[in-house]
Amino acid sequence: MKKNIFFLLFGFFNLFSAQNGYEISIKTKGIAKDVMYLKIFNGTVSDSYAVDSAKISDKTSVVKFVQKQKILGGIYKLELKSNKSALNILVNNGEKISFTLEGSNLLGLNAEQEPNIGFLTYERQSGNNEKKLELLKAVQKKYPSPTLNLYTKLEEKKNVKIPENLDERKKLQASFLGDIDVNERRIQILPNSYQFLNKYFTILPIDNENYKIGVDKLLKGQNCDSKNYLFYLKWIFKNLEYYSQKGMNDAYKYTFNTYLNDMKCVNKNETFYKSIAAKLSALEAVPIGSTITNTEMQKLDKTMVGLSDIYAKSKYTFVMFYDPDCVHCQEETPGIVTYIASLRNSGADIQSVAYLNTPDDQKWQSFVQEKGLQNWINVKSKNNDRSYVEKLEISSNPNFLLLDSQGKVLLKKYNQQEIAKILMSLKN
Image 1 (cartoon, one colour):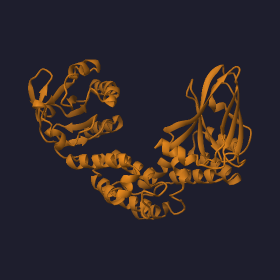
Image 2 (spheres, one colour):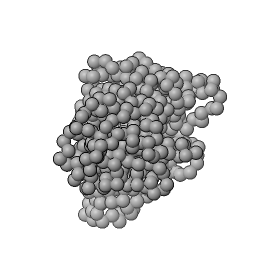
Image 3 (cartoon, one colour):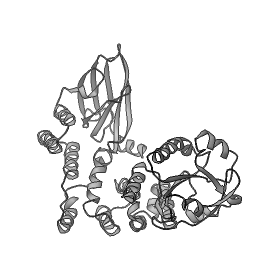
Image 4 (cartoon, helix red, strand yellow):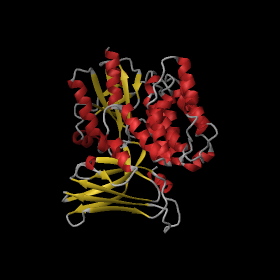
């Protein structure tokens, strides 16, 4: 994804054309030693990556970022390594931009030219969203550009108030995309694109039929060769996973079969296609709200136990399937252990099961010790029988389930916010 966005930004253009690329200069003062990054967004403020970096020292106090190839203008992020302070700037193709920075807090960055003088005033504005939006619109009106025009329009869209009346909501959804070019490539690299999409899909109440209507309106007439098609699909499938508690399997399956399940999309991004196909199989095998199939398991002390015997003993049971050789399992397990322990300490009636999801048990005991799983119920399949993998569609690692005391599947992923929401909703 990041590689694709890089080529999206920097095409093969005349390297020496004065109208191409950018030159960003930042005069710093009072920074003895640091690194400044220039970053690009992946549709949201929480996901960005560096396209350039520069060291700052007493001898090198002027930061320069230079790109000689034509770029797709966007909102870029400046960030300091030492304290993670950050601020967004506007970068258009062919511009020379200069700033000054005194001290090591990027909120103190000052622009020497418009439109960044006005844009930084907008960026630093806190509190009232309406006032902040008016500041942005004033800058856009005075200094219009393709990037600023689109960014402002998305800001206006994401701040639209959703009416209470259902008929009015339907009218709003029908017109919401009307003045947006959904194939505008800049959408992929703006920090407010995900929020714009989230607003669009929540205009109507979240259910399978409304979601399918939203997908159709967004993707009709496009295919996997369209500029933003896979960008939208990746967001949609993640969003459907987020709403899995609402039983969105039908919308997930519809979107896959209607918009992804063809050879053009397979050839375009086979890895993405296979990952969504696997998730769809898992959703169909064990849907949210279904009762999990019982399976016989062997505990670490070699005694046998059934899954149904475990989940019946607590209000909630959290199950983690893992492989000691899985890098993600190694990295994520300590944090998961800490979180589940915090739930217990807060009074939640929840037990935890660590299920060895590999026939190789040589590292089983050492993984339990090293990752703090001693207080979990540690199990593997009886006689290394792998039939449960097909029944539950959990061939990959790690995998997660949250069950109630009847074995009903409440959640199929590890997400602290959603786990807490489920525990609180059932508590009330």
